[in-house]
Length: 185
Image (tube, rainbow, N blue to C red; front, side):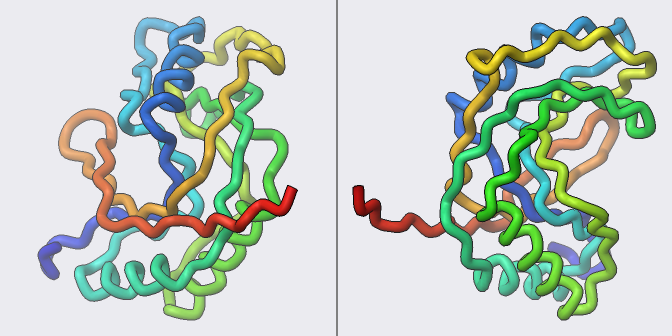
């Protein structure tokens, strides 16, 4: 990373290929207007902490924060579509937030604040964006329980967002496996 060129960085959970395919199938069911842009399946992610513009030195601090984060692996069930008018997006959301994700979110935001990153954390709303540029609210279908998507969070990633003409494209800068605990059943 070039010191003169800050990068847009954020921490996220990314789905595996099979989960991306199931999310893509949900996205293709959306009744969108012609101006809407479906997000590429390889760009699906769940943002845990958006940092924003960061220098190379700050990127190293972010890597240390990511490496120090400890969280058990967890599952997440994406079970509802939502239209968010201000950013003009359609997302798939997980209405039930696992305790492990809530703890990871709190821990990351606390560590980032300690390191001097000014964030606006508001609250955790687990979602993945399926379409952008959705100017009018679509009639979104309900997702029956059997058609939602289960995702297994296996790693925390530090992603870079590139916005050179067109929709964002995301690159993994670094990643850290989540902890797996031995089952006793």
